Amino acid sequence: MRSRQLLPVLVMLVLVGVVACGDEGNKSAERAVAVVEATIRHVASEHPPAEGAEAGDLPVVYVVSVGEETLSAGIQAEVVSNLRDEIEVRFADAREEAIDETAPTAPVKDGGVLVVLGEIPKLGNPAVVPVEIYTARHEHIKMVYSFVPAGDVWNITSTSEVPLDAI
Image 1 (cartoon, rainbow, N blue to C red):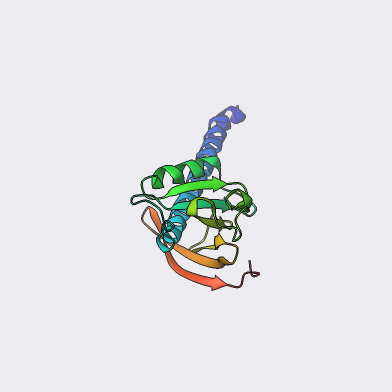
Image 2: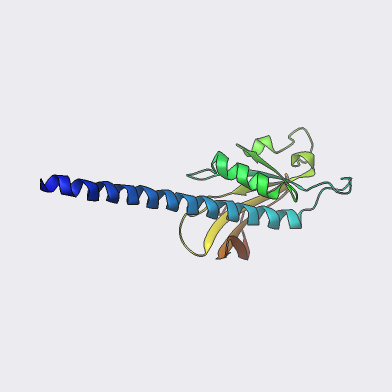
């Protein structure tokens, strides 16, 4: 008899746990979207469209995610949708997809810039993310970006250049 009384309580605890885990996953995805968007905006502001681009052309930014966990298709789609009026964002599975190896300097295709994002931490404040920025064979740097939340957005609070072999 007592087990029948406990059954509804156990079911309720399981449901609360599932909802809490789902909510945590949503917050992690929202955080990832905000950090990726802030990174892309920052890089695009420092690397406007290439010379010869027509007025009104959006900057092209290729993004490759590296690390233990890559960015899900849902996160990628949300970033592309959110930035569609500002920046042409193209996600790639590997950096080679973004680089024109047929040209002597191996520039990024379509006059763009390549952002190689390290893993975005799911927890912690500030969020610290390694970022490589590549425009051509001898024009790339590695950075570490720090982010803090401000409402629904995450702002870059500091950037530090690191040696190319550091991360």
